Image (cartoon, rainbow, N blue to C red; front, side, top):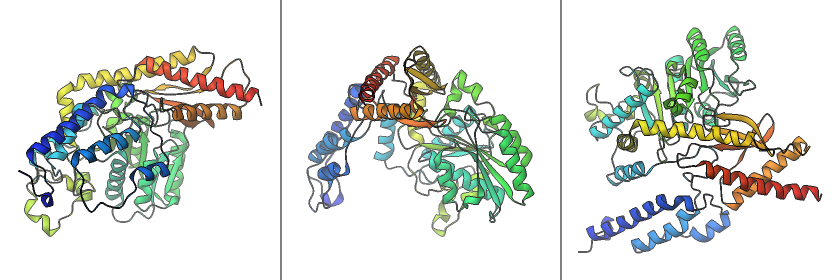
Length: 482
């Protein structure tokens, strides 16, 4: 029997058939992803020619729309989960979590308040407690909330820090971060209405770590001028190099100076599950708040960030509002309404994918995957150091390696080397065979690999380096001809 399309419904048979086609496409994608080209290219004009149209007045058969999307949309998006996607911080994802997202969306679970979905709220409480234990935060007193990503987690953290430390008057408040802090922190500071004069960007040392002495000098100067140092942002795993700031030293300064200690561990904090990462993360448990991005190194699909705090009351004291239309669903104090712990009222059920994937694979396999990633970056560094063509600019740190083409048989100027390495990156990306872009370290253009995909192999890396070498030879020949 045909459904009334005005109710936006399909028959059971139509839904079943349609659903199987989508699942088949997702399974095929996961199974064959390695054989695909990871990079998608397309100009605005090309995309307009494919998709630009007026909103259709009349509908189209569901399978026809699906076929069009699979053919034209999914094939024209860069695959951040591809084994040869090395740039930015890749999103390796996993199939279990992808299906969990399908369940959460399919059931359209509202994960804002306890009364709407006690099970969803409970799973968020449970998974937050798992993370509190992993990072050494107080399990009973601590708390947290899942967000869309690290940007929203950092914004939530800084909003909380301002409320707890400054109250309503933050006109003299000063915030400190390093020149390697993620750009989302600066964006959050701007959103919160701080002036440029209230931000202190502290230079890092030669290893790109927060300069403790320069920080101390800056805090002392600000206090002498009658200002109010209130928050410090450290990083556990910078995007550029994977560097971890001296967390214990910074924690001691914050405790002495009564400054909120926030750690942005969106990229690197998950490395605490490995032996190497755990030693680097010493002091992370002393933070007042910590940002973690499960959609990075906890292998979850987009979007999933997380903010952890030492005291869950920090969040509720910052974000709780009591509108009349919510008065019947407040519940008791043990039944957490997560809309009282963050910015969003309407929230999707993000906890489900993290819960199901950890229950399915177990924490041990996550530890193994993260350890493998770190060892893969170290193996890559070993290959580069044995080559006469490549120079390691910054050693493998938390699965990030920075290097550049600089053959010992040549005497290229810094400007020439910058041009060569930029050319290599552009040619690799335009070939679509790998996603490998540059960054700037010590004023040099360098190639950067972030190797957090557990399905990336050393052979993948070797093939990519060979590809880079071929383009290096190509540009060298052009330079030789003048």
